[in-house]
Every structure is written in structure tokens, then in C-alpha cells.
Length: 116
Image 1: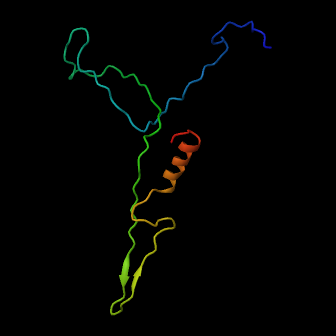
Image 2: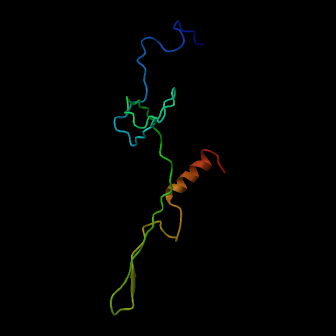
């Protein structure tokens, strides 16, 4: 059985504190503009910016379907009846089909997350 520590609960005085590192080159910057004075309701469109406060949000991009179309050439040598066609990559069999990543995610959701 564990015994109660003599330390007070919460952050200890010697703790350095850790947080996410602030990125010097974010992928996207969104400027939030102030248009009106909150106290006096003055229009601030022509007033110069005094300073900016920065906050960053680190997130995963939204999943998006990627549709890749393969176009196989067909060629016929002049004066011959035989038609030659390029070969589609392995696994590309139907006119439209799901790729291997979709199948992998589907199996994961059914087996690990128990989604029907």
C-alpha cells in the first residue's frame, strides 16, 4: 500500500513546466482584425496595429479522399490489326474501386473500435 507524500498537492516549486513548443514557421497564419473600439465604438479600420498576440493550434488535417485515375494508352501500329494496351498497376482491376488504405481503416474500425 502506498503512503501519502509529505509534498503539497499540485505543481512542485522545482518543476520546470513543459508545454508544446511554439512553432517559428507555422503552416498557416490567420490574422484576426479588430474593427471597432469596444469602449467607445469608434471605427478602427485606419488605425495602425499597436501589437499582435499570437496563439497556435496544432491539429491533424482533416481526412480527405484521394481519387487517382489511371489512364492506360492503347496504340495500334499503322497497317496492322493488333491493338496494344498499357498495363494497369497491380491491384487496379475495376473501373472504380476502393484503395488499400480504405480497406485497412475499415478493418481497424470493425476489429479494434467495434464499429459495425
